[in-house]
Structure formats: C-alpha cells, structure tokens
Length: 315
Image 1 (cartoon, rainbow, N blue to C red):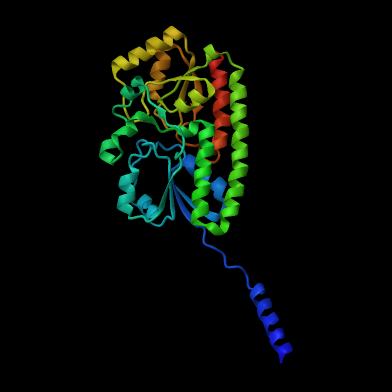
Image 2 (image 1 turned 45 degrees about the vertical axis):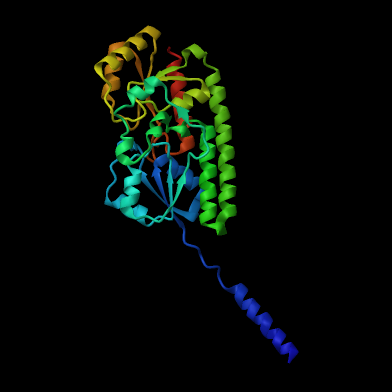
C-alpha cells in the first residue's frame, strides 16, 4: 500500500512538472512620446505592449490627443511620462480616459535645470501650464532632461523599477535588460564627451529652433541659442528676432539647425539675414521613423553629435 501511494505521488508530481508554463500577458504600457517609448522597449523587450502617444517626428508641446489616445490610456497598466511640465495635455487626457494605470515619471530624481530669465521670456506663450493643471513652478524648469545621457540613465532605472513592480515574475529580466542598456548609455556618454572635447570651446555655439538642448549644453559644453523658448508653439517678437540676428552676426555663428518636429521657415529667415549655414536636422523632442537617422534614443546622439561638430567647425 505504501509503495502504491508513493507511486501515485511521483506520478502526480510528474504530471504537474509536465504542464506547460502559463504565459503571462504582456504589460500594457503607454509612453507619452517616442523617446520614452524606445526606452521602455529596451527594458521590457517582448514582455510589454508599448503604445506611444506622440510618435516619431511629433511635437509633444503642441500635441492634441484624440479618442484613440484616450482609449489606449484607458486600457494601460503603466503610463510613462516625462514630467517637468513637458506634457501639458496629459493631465486632461488621463482624466478623460478614466485610466487606472500606474503613473511613472521618468525624470524623477534628476536635478532639473532652472530656466534663465531670457528663456522664461521666450517661453511666455509656449506651454499653457495653468489651463492644463501644471503648477506655476513648472514654468521655472527645462523639461528636456533626457538630452543629458546621465539623466537618461535615471529614466531607464525608473522605468525598470516600475516594470518590475508591476510584473514581478519578470523582474530579473527587466533588471538585466536595464543594466545592459545603461552600460550602452554610459559608453555613449563618454564618446559624446570625448568627441566634443576635440573642438575648441569658442567654436561650440549653435543656433536651434527652440530651447531643447539646455541639458546637453550644460553636460557637454555647447552653447545653444534659439528664437523660441522651451515650448515650440510660440512666435518670437520682431524685436527678439532682431536681437538674435544681431547676436549671430556679432559672434559669427555659422552653425544653424532645424529640429525634426519644427517649422523650418523661421530658421530659413535667420539664415538669410545672417549668412549662417544650414547644418541639417537635429533630433531633440522626437525620434525619427524606423528608417531614419535617429530611430532610437542612442541613435539620436550618434546622429546629432557628428552633425553638430561638422557645423561648429565652421564658426
């Protein structure tokens, strides 16, 4: 009898072991814009279904969400946003969707860059924080923190932590993917520094469409000048544009770039008035489509840095 019981127990255990593991459903993640979407995909791999609200070449500052975006957010498990006032429409969208998703602020823990008085003046009409529910204090910060790769690493750590909390069965996978990705970003940060260090400091001046590269400038020693503020929707006054033209002429700045999500007409006017040369396209707030030169966060730096150096050498 004892042998029979033992045999039954062994057989039952074998049957349990032989059962195929139940596949877990991928975590449904909504990322506010394309750069965050790429970070999530690097950390999550195939364990997440990622929906990006503002896609490649999209302007998050002026984005107007529709019913499809509210529907995606309603079904989400996680919402990954930048914070620092970058998505002024997101509070309203989240409320309308009735989402139960956990919010993950990717920029949590970075040291925000305070805007200068000149940047605040340029940004007066750019964001509309009040009407969308952001606090007045958000006007004082530059939201483009990912432009410093060290901050990008903080973003990845926050994303990995949120995924691991939401899906503990795959926590080790998220942690391992994040560590591998962080190593790549650290090496990329070292490369950016070494490449830009080859250029004399007095040559490191660039004109761009709006104030999107403040963190990059502080981290890597480049001065960025722009006619628009942090937001990309405002129009500069005639006086502000005239001051910029005078500065470009006075400092003999030749490097001028149009960002992928910007209207080129204003920068064409500056080039015509100053003789500054078009250095091509920079990627700041949005990635390129998959077949473009900057389809990932890392590729964005690999594209931008050589383009910047080539143009600044003419200063």
